[in-house]
Length: 462
Image (tube, one colour):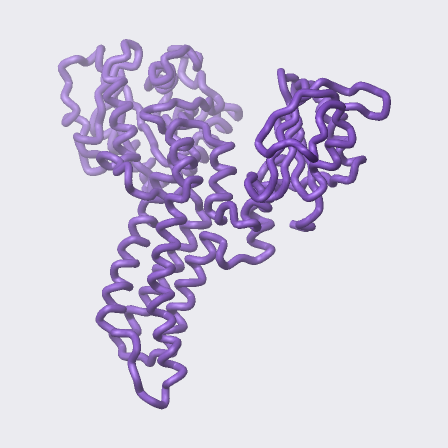
């Protein structure tokens, strides 16, 4: 990311398309001057910060638009610099015209995420908080929104900073020992250091374990509905969505391609994927559908194997599941005994066997919406193990997840060093590695490549 901090940047901060209002945003030392030169109302150089002003934007003698200008003087602004936000009418033409006037006045077009990058550089937020801004913009469910807000408010980063501070205090004593190596003195109490490392590792491991839930909350849970033709997969999809989304037919092989829809349960988004029936394909098109179904199964987090409870035997069900488990052994798995209205006296234990337990078989009648709410409860139960502690920190960022795994590896090396009686210089080296990876999460240790990779994923104008 090639940026020149200290100049003035401008961008359209609202989405493209016709709307009531669009916003053009500027940040930098000349933001007020550039807008004031074309704003036919108040003298912006004299107005108070955090105030709004109605007026006209002109290009020479030509009237461009009636606008509302918001002024936010640094350092008490999002970026820490002077910011101007121009709210104009929401025509793409008008917004682009206003932006063009700002660029002609001396601003340059902002790069992706550059406003938030400046907020990070000026100390308005750390790196993990900056990343949560992008997560907040992309939030698609109540859970992902609440998670992003919690991280934006510094939930995870405050915990990481506290852990890093405690380790630094002890690491500095180890480094001091190295300066007095010939004196054979010990400044860092080894028992206290061992206890600290154990406690920090416990916190780090909990954060690592929280990633599965956090990732599901952030991105949604890919849930594939699979099974033989005419098992009622499309009917189940419709029942879960409470909508006639998929075409239902008694003719086998009706579903030739995948159908994807999002279902929100308890604030978590489940990305439901209805697939073609799994059997020996009757033609090239159906074969492609079966191939695509298997691909989706491999990519899934949850598989719902649907079978006709009025037709299949326990041997047939377990044979199907055995084949699926060869592909999805790492995923969560439920068997759905559908069409129970045709076999009302059957018990789920009749289909239990080597590859599926009775507790993982759910009896439903998709056509009559029987036990659909139970199925929804079981789906959330696969993702959320018990109640979520509202005070617990949850990570959803894969970069943080990988960094925390590196922290744990480094602290494991510290513990191993104690057990093996290695010298302080090797222990200090492993402590430095742990501190490095903790610092990368919050941005206390950064590289240009790291910042470029993170902020390039933002939208322009944010």
